[in-house]
Amino acid sequence: MNAAALLGRLKPAKRERSGPGLLARLRRRKAGGDSDDAPRARKERRPLSPLAKRLLGAYAVLALGLGGLAGWLVMNAEHTTEAWRAAIPSVEVAVKGAQPPAVPAAPPATAAAVPVQPAPATPTAAPAPPPAAAPPPPPLAVAVNEPVTLTPAPVPGLVEDSRNGPLPRIAEDGRKPWQVYARPFPAADRRPRIAIVLAEMGISGVTTGNALQKLPPTITLAFVPYAERLDNWVERARSKGHEVMLSIPMEPQDYPRNDPGPNALLSMLPPERNMERLEWSLGKAVGYVGITSTTGSKFTANPDAVTPVVAAMKARGLMVLDARANPRSVAGTLAGEAGVPRAFADRVIDRDLSRGAIDDQLAELETIAKTNGAAVGIGAPYPSTIERINLWLTGLADRGIAIVPVSAVANMQKQ
Image (cartoon, rainbow, N blue to C red; front, side):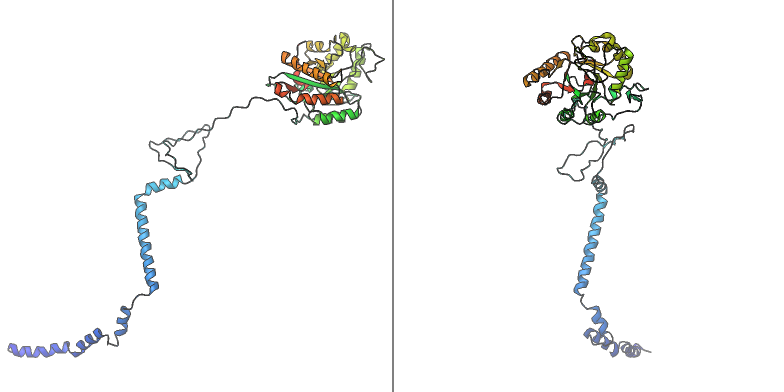
């Protein structure tokens, strides 16, 4: 078979495979006329809705942001970690006895949690040393009107029962009533000291109440043992911060014309009788630091009469204030020789009740205190006395002098 015949046979078959049906479908597809494929074509070429476009844009922006953040963290990971740690508030506390942490060679700079002003980086990370303790303030005297709580009386171990009532005694551990019941005063205060003692308290309820109301608590009060409601008066005085003594009735020079009161100590009585009378007085109250007497001008000048009293004071842990009712009194001298804490009255501040005379006596006490380091004034709770004392106290601290309880001048004065 020649080539022409063979070509003639092949051409009809080719036309059959690519005949009108295929061409027609192609034409219809291009023209969109094929009913079967037209919906799919229209579906493939349908434009995106606005919502889809926005979502697609948001996804793209998020992907870009996450990618950028990841890249930035990779490049700045170390610095970011340091800044994050620095932003956390922290406090370094030095613990006594603990080993300090090792200091790195090149510590990173840290920033404050909420900086007000930028500060330079700290060169080292060593813990800050604890702040130095502030030095203690210099000791100051107790203020004139400062409330002070005295030790409540009676204190167990400092009292013994007797037929005359509770009597003071030295405790088994060595504590003494004159120290336990005293109004506290700083021993380190080196200023000149003045103690004011108002005796004969309790004789008049009106006078005693007026004194408790108007006197500052730094004034020492001495009560007579035969006063009505003595235990109540003493308790009231101590609750206000007053140091308390007992003013023991003793024989005056003009006895019996001048009667010092019931159970007074008399030089004509044997020591045993005087000790009974003394215990009668001591048992009327509790919480006092010692005894004095403004009436015993005759008794206190008699060494034989005074010696047993001084021995009793030593045995009971009390102090003695020699009121010097008689310039020849030996009470303070014998007390000092026996090792009993003692003080002397340098001036009776209200022997003359005029205002100027009282002011003069108080001024003399200042001179004595500046010369000898301590002075004691004694008086009575007269209204004029209380008035002048209060006025005098207003400027005493400015003049460099401390007003103190009588226990704070024990054994400070020269004979």
